[in-house]
Amino acid sequence: MPYNRIYLKLTGNSTTGFRMPKMVFSRQFAAGDEIFRLGDHARNAYIIERGEVEISLLRDGEKVVIATLGQGEIFGEMSMIDDAPRSATVTAAADTEVVVIQRSRFQQPLKTSDPLMNMLLRVVLTRFRDAQRQLSGMRAKSGEIDPAMEEIRTLAFHRIQVEKDMRQGLEADEFELHYQPIIRLESGLIAGFEALMRWRKNDGDMVSPMEFIPLAEETGLIAELGRWALRVAIQDHGRFANRYRTAFPDLPMPFMSVNVSGLQLSELSEIDQLEAIIKESGVDPAHIKLEITETLMVQNPDHATKALNKIKELGVSIAIDDFGTGYSSLSYLHQFPLDTLKIDRAFVNNMDKSQNSGRIVSSIAQLALAMEMDIVAEGIEEKPQMDALRELGCQYGQGYYMAKPAPADAIMELIDSRPGW
Ligand code: C2E
Ligand code: CA
Ligand code: CA
Image 1 (cartoon, rainbow, N blue to C red):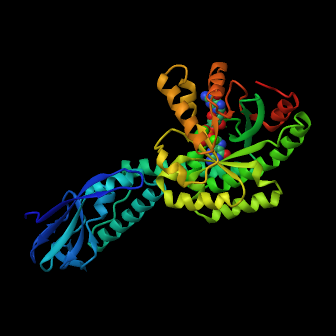
Image 2 (image 1 turned 120 degrees about the vertical axis):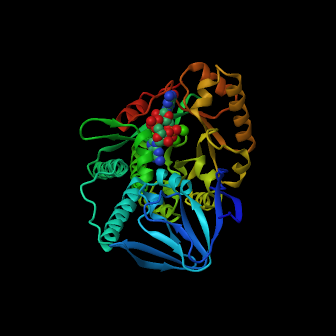
Image 3 (image 1 turned 90 degrees about the vertical axis):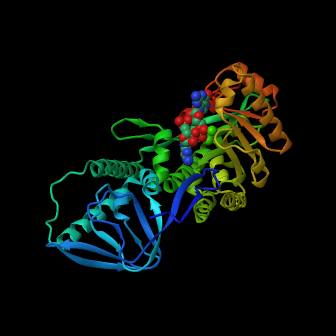
């Protein structure tokens, strides 16, 4: 049977620039042609463009038609999910044209999808196959362990366990915020703080945010965690501000920077919740800064524009975090209402080792100046790095050289000691 139309279709998420070619063919069958047979190895699924097919089983050696499908319907899809051989025979009941979807088209999304969804699909499929077997007079399979199913089940249970732990952790106050001072480089004095989340599990283990934030994003718990962080950071800001006023009576109030995940902003209504938290607290929004990574802006610029403008209306300022990593593009910067650009620590760390990193930091600093944005250089670990950044006109710096993130009480003691760098 010749393939009468073969074309390459470009798919993938065009906003990320990721494109994957995939083969989608059209095939024609004459009335009576067998498209595949019970027990065949499964290669494709099919969508009927025109015509009709019959799905049949054998019962006691007799052909039993269990369904007739027409235009727009799909068949052969079950074996795309598991590796089982065809559980029925499909025959063209009229001259039929189908779109063929290759197995590889299903495999990638299945690999990357939520293990829980994956498990659900397979469970439904297994039950359906068992019912089909019973219909054809065969006995349902039992007691057989499918290794692929076992792996998916393990992954799904692990994911559920972590989600449950995080939810309980949130209720049991296992999450806390640590704060890292942000220094005005010109004066060497503290100008603000970044709130960084910590999870101390009840067994005493500390889990890094690098580990639990992505999980919270996958499970959707990030919205709740993010709201909690904003609420606590604002409360602690009030305590820090009191001490700061005494320690540095001539300086403006310090700011509080809170990280917000792009996924947390996937619903615009979430911003109303953040607004309510700020309003309830009575804090002057001008003292609050939200740090957002550039992924949000690159992956969905239209949504990001709406979200960031809405955030800006709250009166808070916006920092773009980890600038220079990932998909960084200068062209989009002016589209968004950004106040601060945080240069990723990878560049700062390599400034003295690589000329390129030095040049990149210097260009970012110039760019930010031209766009009237502040710059915070992250990850300053040595004095020469701080000196070099000062030279470049970088306004703010943050890093282990000045202070590591610490619990609120330690930060208040630090403020009292009026440190300078
Ligand atoms: P980030 O926003 O880039 O935060 C800065 C990270 O760099 C922090 O790691 C901080 O401890 C670390 N750091 C600061 N100075 C230095 C330095 O001089 N040298 C080195 N090597 N590291 C330094 P941390 O606290 O482990 O946080 C990691 C990431 O987790 C954060 O990166 C942020 O993306 C995420 N995260 C933390 N808290 C929150 C949160 O409340 N919400 C969200 N959405 N993400 C958070
Ligand atoms: Ca940050
Ligand atoms: Ca950062």
